[in-house]
Amino acid sequence: MKKIFIGTISCKSVLEAEKRPAICLYVDSKKRTRDIRYICRLAEKKAVPVEKTNREALDRLTGSKRHGGIALSAGRRMIPSVSAGMSGFLCLIDGVEDPYNLGSICRTLYAAGCSTLILPRRSWENAESTIQKASAGAYERLDIRMYEDASLLVKQLQADAVPLYCAYRKDAVELPSFQFPETFCLAIGGALRGLQADLIAASAKNLVIPYERDFRNALDTPSAAAVFAYEYIRQKKEQS
Image (cartoon, one colour):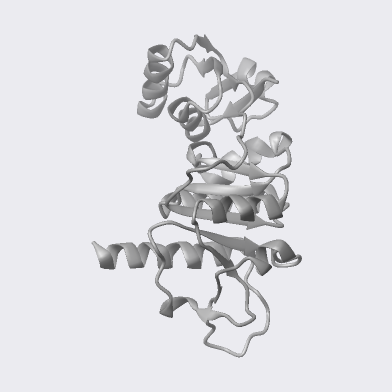
């Protein structure tokens, strides 16, 4: 299935990440910015055809006037299943349905040094362009794995001796007082549905974000992911 990615950030991330086959790069011949010149050189280096065209043709190809003079046709990204041997900062996001939220989460996790994003198995293909824009290209660069069954995922983590920590209030430790190990999996649920019971039952430790006010509602998932991710960064910098 061919997809069209528009704009310099999306086109550059697809070409640099090499997680899907790039088919053809389309460029407005009147556009000569530094970014576009770099992307054209990158495409040529990777033997991806570069077609010079005009703005009107790009409007028709992309169905948009907000392409910035560049578009890339590319194939499907095959997202693998969870496998043995994963290490580092693994982040499992459960219950997120909105592509803008997923894109925001990807942007935060990639910037924070997350090794792998783990998601329940589903197709995001129809929303990939939205996710790409919302993530500033981080969705394409981030290692992503999917799982079919939470209980089997738990068994895989246990087999690899990867501790699972859940963002869950019951019997929880406040985040600032917890030290992340070198390899771990952090599970964060959607603000409405939360985490699956199999994940909560397997949690080695529940973690909670402390509030300054008596506020009983959960943060939205992108905000919670940002707090956890930047606590991870803070700890890494303290250790270095």
